[in-house]
Length: 196
Ligand code: SF4
Ligand code: SF4
Image (cartoon, rainbow, N blue to C red; front, side, top):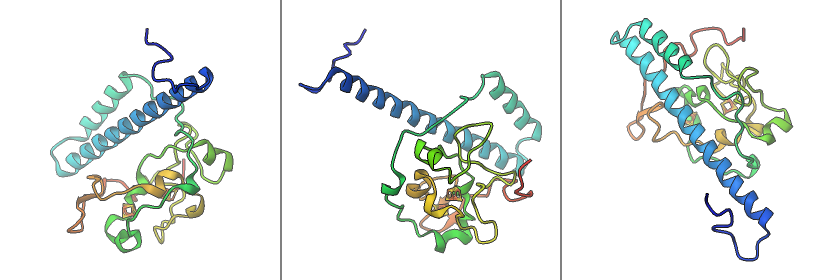
């Protein structure tokens, strides 16, 4: 068993050391969860693109869904480690000049909320997948203004929405410098945003 005091700061109280280790572990687990969510989203987008191209049949998507269900349930609750979102620097991306190309697709992505978001009560989360930012049937975040593609919760938007940088994200751009957007995932924006 690893020495629980390994790496301890000389003079630090044992409780503080354990707390710091727990915090590091929590951050690592949360980072893994985010990476897994991104991989899952990439895979789902890829499957939808291949279906749209005719390279896969719709039955393949159902097969993948069954395989995912057989792999076990998703975690019942996810919460990003505490971060003061009002201290988070905004991304340098000039979204208003790009929105006609990207169609705000970052607002279709999975976003973990923090205790700050939940305590404020200013952004909604999925009831069946707490505490993930809520999306509607059209694939977009609940808070997106469908007419302007602006954020309806701008001043209270989660930390992830503030510092997300899409430039290297293949879900958004084939080539950011040349302003070539990736194909929009099929189905996004195709149905009414109203929840079931
Ligand atoms: S996809 Fe990129 S450019 Fe478009 S709204 Fe999101 S961050 Fe801004
Ligand atoms: S909270 Fe705002 S910026 Fe974040 S995903 Fe929703 S609409 Fe987009």
